[in-house]
Length: 223
Length: 234
Image 1 (cartoon, rainbow over the protein chains, first blue to last red):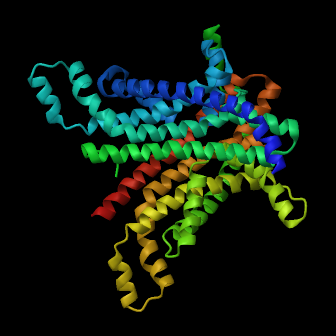
Image 2: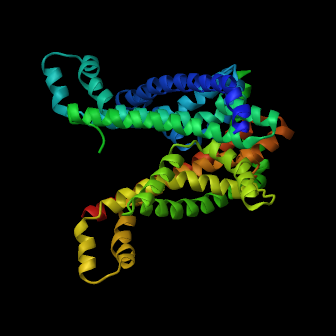
Image 3: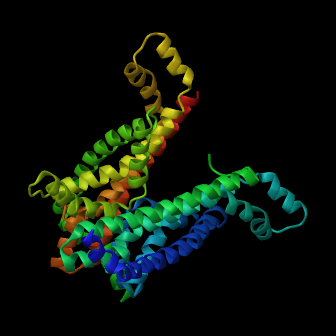
């Protein structure tokens, strides 16, 4: 147990610092993915001239492996667009791209599940298309897709371990740095794996409770 | 400056010049994929059978397996299997053990995806009506015969769409094995980039190549799943 104390417990501040960076990256990526996914989905469904472009982007983001996308954003985008200008930004942008593709599909399924009659009822009482979308369709979509959105957050957390490869100092990065200092990987890497597993487990348990609660209250949700 | 960068990234001739290196890298992705898919499906079936077993210790073991590996990020598992598992095994067996990067990649991805497959198998197994099992017993079939002749054929049919989607995810996950120096496509790209100093066309080429492979596979899966669904529901 001495090793655990020396290598893990005494390094708790470094590991915590890394974990906070992980949370920061994931939170930014998650927020951007929700906005990006919603934008892609709405453009695809309602802006006809841009539909092929939005479809192409969704398919590209979904079908390209996250690690490839991360390297591509990190190495190619700065030369192509002059942005992102830091590894940190490249990290969360790549995570956001991937998830926005998946969320665009989730939102589309959610919007298509809202019965037509409700929109027609909204239009019948004189609401415009934007108002129908904002007041009638999207609130229901937010409820029905909430479990899938939480699930997407766990995917982001898992993928976020890769940003350490481009030297973003997240939990994975700090843990590997400690391994390189002490040359004793067993305790540090096992503890790091346990932290990630516990965190992802907790998030998906919350997601499951959320979907159960939604199903009980509103009679909706998966399963 | 922008237009030059754009031309350079669209001009994939540098990637084309290294096509043989790149394709043999892609072949490594397929090797890792095939081996870890086999491991994941076998382990996943084992864990699912543990989870639906009668005895409590088996169920606990199965649940532990699923919850550990399903919630573990691929990359930390890859690093853990490559750097920690050999030390633990070596200490247990009293000798020095080192894993070949390829072996570590297959073990790590096999374990992670066995967690996903176990859940898919379990859902399939639990969807079989009890009456089928009772009918098998009434005809005098052994538990093993019931499993392989009555349960599994139906499970495989039901889980096929989701199982195939997981294969596509597994193939995407194989791109990270370059991080423990398995010489796959991403590894070749980083090597060539180090000598040519032109990341733009090389990484764009790799992204497009992976996209083409994954998109084609995912489209095939979608097509096959729709057919299967129609046939099962009909």
